Image 1: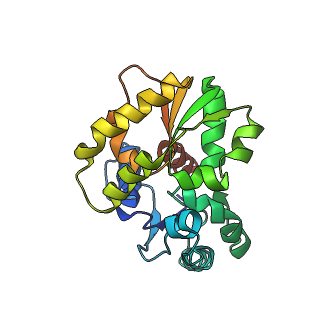
Image 2: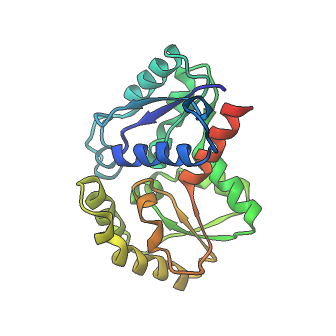
Length: 226
């Protein structure tokens, strides 16, 4: 199998969740049956929130580029980044390395289109809306994002998870936000923040949803085993 490099630490728990999902994707009988990952767990990547929302933080791009180069030198044959907002810096990562980049946003948009979704309720960091990272992938597949008129509550949930608060404490507020998006006309919900991937049980029962992290894990497995 081919090892895949992971640009991790954004946040650390989300990276661990990806690794757990990768373990669960394999019907393993021994260690060697699992998918090889080279994980760069770097919580010191400059804050995407400070850089993109507050407009006063250090540019994360150079750090992510150096991490991708480190992963490639370590033997990674592809790069993946389990952070939706950080895909704003994907062009810098692609330009700084020579191995394929498994773009989580493109993979997610393709999956949504295949599922028949049209109006996508965005459970995402406000930064993804502000910088439009999903605009191009969605446009390519005829998808329309549905955003909350006020999304500060989503950022509060994301900050709480990053601060180490129990995920269970955020289920009720996220469930309410999910229902608000449905009331705004969404026909499908998208978990587009890997902190929120820890809270999939907050989605109202019977409501179709996609987790972008799941799209990425399937792509990693496909690449590694191809």
